[in-house]
Amino acid sequence: MKTSANAPVAEPTPDFSSDQFLIGQWSCDLQREGRQPAKEEAFYSWALGGQWLALTYTLTPGEADLPVTTTMAYETFDAALRKWVYFSFRSDGVYGTSYSDGWCRNVKIYEPAVDAPQKFRLVVTKVSDQEFSEEVEIPSGNGWRRTFLLRCRKAATSTT
Image (cartoon, rainbow, N blue to C red; front, top):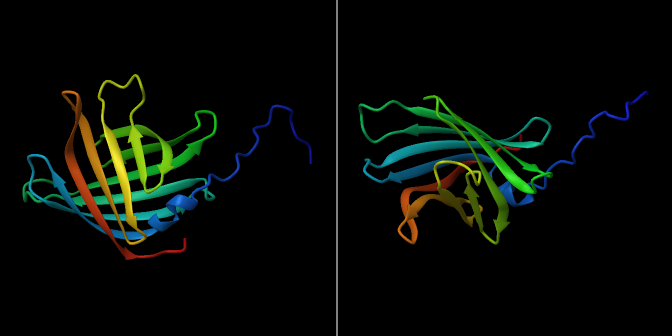
C-alpha cells in the first residue's frame, strides 16, 4: 500500500470511559428561569466509528403555545486543543460550540470559547449510572446565577 508523507494520521479513539454511563435513553425534567417546567427526552450513542459521542434531545416545553425543539449534538476530544469539544445544532436554527477539560470526579464543566461574546458555563454532574443533572449558569455580580436545571434518569440502555 502506498502512502503519502502528508497523509493524515488517524487519531486514536477518544477515551470515553467516563461517558459510558450516558449511552442509552434518558427522561428528563427541565426547569428554566421564567418558564414553565418542561420535559426532555435524550438519547446518547456512539457515532462515526466511535470517534464521537452523539446526543439527540427533544424538548417539550411546558407552555402549550411553544414548539417542540430537537437538538443534535456531537462531542469528541481535540488532541491539539487538549479539550473536549461539543457541537450542538437545534431545530430552531440555534447552534453552538463549547469546550471542557473533562471529568473531574463526577463533574464536567463546559464553557464557550474564550473570545465568545456570551459567557456561560454548563455544569454536568453524574449522580449515579442512572441519573445526572445539568445546570446552566451565567455571570452575575461576582459569581454565577443558575438559569437552567435539567435532571435526567435513565430510561433504557443501548449497546450501539
